[in-house]
Length: 237
Image (tube, rainbow, N blue to C red; front, side, top):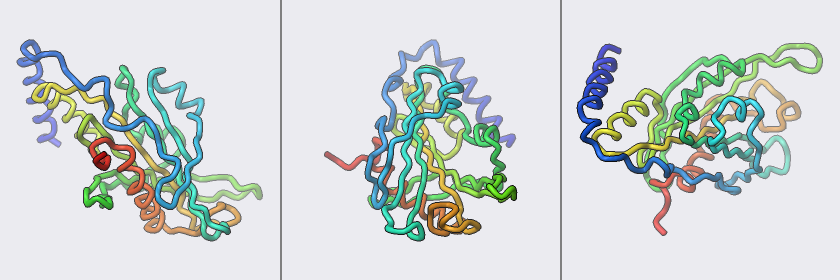
């Protein structure tokens, strides 16, 4: 922790000393992602969803929000998967991009685990993401309470870099504005899916999945999404 504080103080000092000699920054208007989520991603088919009223209320007006519900076309609920993907792209107000943990807490979720994981893409590239295990209680129609578990996976994307860490994102912003003359217009993609091993397929509308199976399902979707979303991962034209 002390080392991180020292790094921040050093970088802040560098900024103060060098900002008056630095030319105007570049890449501030162009995000490192395409402002869309594909309709088809591997075995998943996505249906467009509107941003919620809460998202519109809390985020600055020029924030770009793209959402899709991705489903696998199983013939029966016992074979179906469902995951919700969201892409948030910052406008001129930096409040658009923040730690998702804050919003999850405000929505009543409790974070039970947080870890950085690696998703190996078909191209051989490795994408580092943060996996949050989350939980909250839901009230069933019969009056009983049931723990609802889910996994929320996200990462931050800059002009030509990505990171699963909000602290690292801030440090990269500071470093690159000074040393590379780049002002990142940050975005963050995220995917959330429920853990369904304590629900019947009729209750959830999905197949039964434990934590590990749910994470792997999310990673399968990310493997198809990331190369069509993140500019530094786009296949050559």
